[in-house]
Amino acid sequence: MGFVRKFFAWLMVPLVCLVGLVVCVARPFNPENNRVLGRWLALVGRSVLGMERPIQGRELIPQGRPMVIIANHQHNDDLFVLGDLLPPRTVTVGKSILAWAPFFGQVFWLGGNVLINRAKSHQAVAAMQATSEAISREHKSVWIFPEGTRSHGKGLGRFKKGAFHAAVNAGAPISMICASSYSGRTLGWSGRFEPVSVRVLPAVETAGLTVADIPELMERCRVQMETAIAEMSPN
Image (cartoon, rainbow, N blue to C red; front, side, top):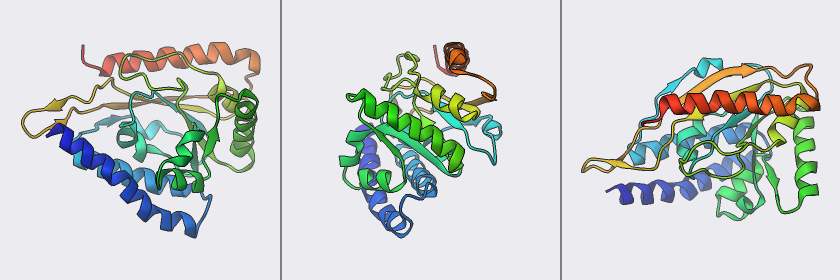
């Protein structure tokens, strides 16, 4: 049953995105498209998977101001776990290959999200500079997976600097969202997926920090997230 649930959950993604494409075409590059689609995909996906997602600290996400949101990245199923947590006017940073995914890629692009080709470092740097400007000038928030790749539930990987450069350059707070380690196990004959807990940590202010402060800022955020993930995850 678990396989059947997962098959139908991912089958729903292009279908939901096809409906969402109408919204995106009506208001192209509006960051609110991401919040609408993220919520639809997460709620539908968790419902089909039978997954519970208890959350703590949601009220700690800063309100009414642009920010950089960082979260741990474990599986593609993170879309269902975290997709409904995007604050208003939030864009995300993803690999350029996402643009080719049927329907999902098109709504991702029309949401004004940032597509990065990591194989071309000069393009990636330029994209992150544009991200900093979007935070300051366009009053947008940015969601970034600082590990840059999936961990497959094997602990928090090394952080890349892009998210922290963007936050410091814009003087924006960093909001940390942590999901407990999960492997997609199913429970009982019904094939319901294991619950995944989420915790939002107090935001870290970056106003007044410089590039020289980034290594310490990265380590501080990583330690806090690693501790929270360990506390939520089963032994």
